[in-house]
Each structure stands twice: as C-alpha cells, then as structure tokens.
Image 1 (tube, rainbow, N blue to C red):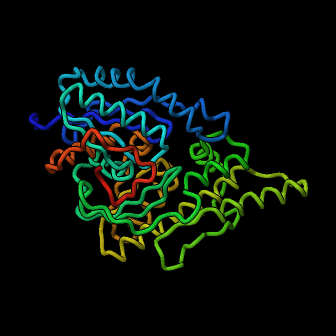
Image 2 (cartoon, rainbow, N blue to C red):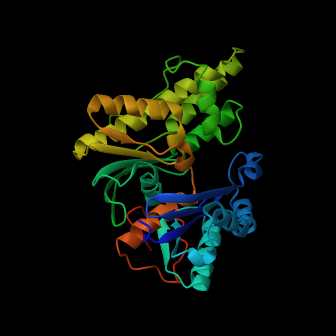
Amino acid sequence: MTDEPLVLGIETSCDETGIGIVRGHTLLADTIASSMDEHARFGGVVPEVASRAHLEAMTPTVEAALAEAGLKFSDIDAIAVTAGPGLAGALLVGVAAAKSYALGLGVPLYGVNHLAAHVAVDQLEHGPLPKPCVAMLVSGGHSSLLLVPDVAADVISLGSTVDDAAGEAFDKVARVLGLPFPGGPHIDRAARDGSGTAIAFPRGKVDDGTLDFSFSGLKTAVARWVEAREASGQTIHVPDVAASFQEAVVDVLTRKALQACKRYDVGDLLIGGGVAANSRLRALAQERCDAAGVRLRVPRPGLCTDNGAMVAALGSDLVAAGITPSTLEIPADSSLPITTVHV
C-alpha cells in the first residue's frame, strides 16, 4: 500500500551502524557501516572503539540509505531506534541521533528492543508473522527462546543462556583454533572440510527439562581437548574440531527450539540473530522441523546480523498497531528486557 508510512530505523547496539528504511513490510534501503575490522586485532568488540565508529559513521550512513531508497529527509514519516539491549555507549549514539532526527523532522520516535527487532525483520522477506510463533535468537550476546503472540506488543521469554551465548562460544573457540575474529563465519567455513562426529563434545543442558542454554562447558571442553593434543605433540585437524564443536552447538539449539514448539503447541519456528547465518544450523533446523511438522522461517543471512532494516521493520509494526510514540526522554538501556518491546 502506498499510503503506508515510511519508517527509518537506526541500529547501533554493537559494532554495526545500521540504517534501514521500510514502507510497511517492503524494504527500501539497508545500509551498514561496520567497525569489525577495527575490533579484529583485539579479538573482540571494544565498546569505546564501537561508540566512536558510530559517531563517525552515522551521518554518511543515513545519507547513503536515503540515496539507496531514492528519498529525501522530508519523505520520512517516523524514526525507530534500538534503545537496548546492547553496549551502553554505542546505544547512546544511536538514541541521540534518532532523537535529533525526529525532533528536526517533526516526526514520531519509537525506541525499540533489539531482540524483538530480530524477530520482526523476517517479515521483510517472508511476510506477516504467524500468531503465535516461537522465535530462537542466537548471536554473540544472546541465546534466547521466545514465545511471540504479537511482536509489536507481546513477547514472552521461555529460556536463555545461563553463561556464554552461542556466538560468544564461536568466537572463543575460533581463538583457540587460531581462526580470525569474528569466529562464526570462519568456523562455519572450516567445518565444511571436517566431520561433525569426529569428536564427541558435550551437549550442555540438552535434556534438563528447561529451555535454557549453556555453552561455557562446551567451549572449555574444546579448549582442553586442543591443549591436551598440543601437549602430546599430536596434529590437530582444525576442520574436524570446528565441525564437531559446531555440531554440538546446533544440536542443542535445534533440540531446544523444537522442545519449545512442542511444549507450547506452536507450529511455526523463526530463527534470527547473527548465528542464524550459520549454514549447519539452517540445514539441521530445516531437517528437524520437517520431521516434526513445524514450519521454519529464517531470514537471509544479511538480515540475520545486526542491521537497521530490522529496527525499521519493528517500528513499522508499532506504527501500524497505533502504539503511542516514545518521548524524547527515552533512555538507552543496555539491559532492556525482551518483554519490553517498545520504550
């Protein structure tokens, strides 16, 4: 519909400055400036470096998104911004910019939850979400299972990580194996030449009756396995270690996700977040969902990692639902709970 509002979304929760523009569920622009290379030499994201990069990238990235969509500032009807969770300093940059744009343009402002936005973004590719659906969000900072009756208003936490998130475990294991940061894509690539059954790594909390995750023990098991073989002078076949570690992670993730679907009698599973770009996770999830009669939705890899399109998508849902806009006093909340979709 041409009368749907144009929403500009701003995402700065970690190391990507993401700007997206949508009309309804139609994606018009998705522009990202990443500071990943600046963090790689430290082996992880440095909050101060990320914040500075957001400051430098904000204006040119917004202008690039408008150019990509063929729009002017005056065409924008609403601004949406990630208000949390995330790195406090990084969030502050995005929230301050969003307030400035909203005030200057005279348009409503919507502060949104980063995790709920990872759910909403799938609509840009696969249309409106089933109500309800189960969503599994897996990234460097989060491993969460959610029941989503309505992404604009009602998101319920079913389980989360009790220690390391899945993406965090990928980064730490990659470091052990001498692979670059971020670890996820490099482990995925290395694993293609290895066997997922070569090494029997542990599956944490897989049958404990909860919908929580734990990857710290797995990460430690991989490190100890590598250390023991290095100490005895044995050759380490990195592809086998990568594949066996990856298999342990995706085995637990997919099992827990389908346990949630069965427990709550939900026939649709959505997977989002950066780890959702992992090829083995996507393949095993599809295989197990097909066997269980569950419909699987996973956005294309470019929409799984942090981006402005997901923020704009959730903002568009809030506008369509008639949700009262945020005030210009909204804070950046680094620990914003998933149950708070809009601030």
